[in-house]
Length: 580
Ligand code: SF4
Ligand code: SF4
Figure 1 (cartoon, rainbow, N blue to C red):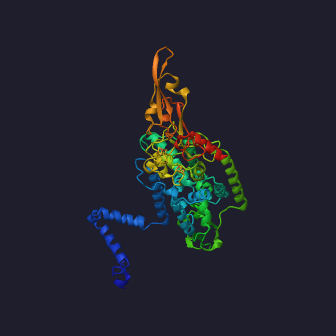
Figure 2: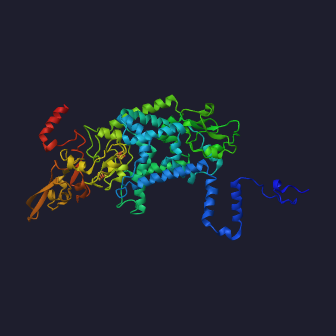
Figure 3: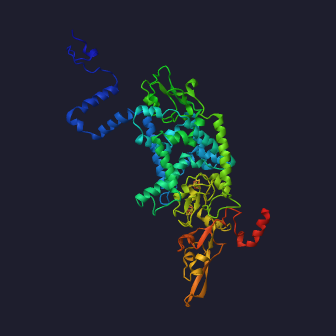
């Protein structure tokens, strides 16, 4: 019996090979005609471009899963972060928003508003990021955060391939409570006025690692790749060690830093308990295979009750579930999840006590007023020391951009509280007269944006005078013309102020061998010295220069003032009386 050709789709002769079913869909018709063309001999090689486009559509777009979109997003933000770090350089800066990631960081905005009682304008952006967190949860951790991407990539490169190991490694651990304790401690310290979130905040930490350890390290291996001259940073080994420690820990515990240490993750975790869209597992469909744990980034237990505050919204569980039991749902059943962060009251109290004790120890370890350290010379435009410590997040953006390498991270010079904040080290560099770059990139206003005119007390700022960051003093015992019968005018020559703050007087003396010699002995005029340090930097007595700058005389502090306005020391008496 012959069949009806139109409906059956065979050749009508009762043969065994059916034709493909006919449909009316124009898309199907197009695909079939495209296939025919593909198999039609020379046509096949005809259009390489259209074949590439069709391959891209078939293999990339048509198969585009949400996890791939996420990888694109992570790659984009990671590259953008690196781009901004690299162009934080005198040669390329050109007004790019190089502090964007720091400004986007809501913990930076929140903690600095606790310490200062104000919201610095550029940090409002970070508070805006909280809105999508309230809708989608901790998406920042796995879609934007460049430090998180670094950890995920490291894990991908060096992690175990054994499936069961991965499943076990991605279960929730109590160690994950640690980040909440650290966050509470840091916020309590911030309430008292001590800003320490920069020690562990991932964006600050990554910026600091890149600026003080990674880029100078790469430049050592590939000279001139990032710097015109090789940069060195005091304590860079420690910053590098911490980076490699956290990155290395991924081999043992995937995303160790993000899960257990990150205070920003904890901050977003607190907020994500209110998120509207969440991962939801349908227990009726679930076959309890635990496959959703294979690549779970947050260790948030999607296989049982999802821990909302731990979920990074990476969507790996949705991809890995073989029976589609997991979905991203709007306000799912609360019985299927654990809403709050895993922080019992006792641990929270422990964090608060730790924060108070930490504050007391840190503040007590350095007195910024009566016992200030003469080496704590802050960049020009810095606010008063107390305000500086309330604002500085130790991101080292200023250190990265400084063209002379004079800015260095402190170790203990400014006490524990000021650890890793920037100071000037004139042995390594000096403050360039016509530069205000550090203030331009500081995201928190610890170093204020000032113009060159303001820095040098020119134009409309002539009356208030130049910004002084310290004062230079001679150590006559080491000065060549003063002690060693040797002519030298280096310091006077390099002094950049006009008129020069260093001047000299001619003296003729009898040398030890009886011959006479005329020397120019240098002096400092403290009313003109701005503390730029070029004299100390250029002094030929390299081990411990014969002229050295200290923090006395800096504009930002009344307590450290050397001369009153106009250089009249007698008015100092008024200041002393006022303080009594
Ligand atoms: S103003 Fe001075 S300290 Fe600041 S970046 Fe320029 S040279 Fe460095
Ligand atoms: S002073 Fe430097 S390290 Fe501190 S917040 Fe500003 S740019 Fe960052």
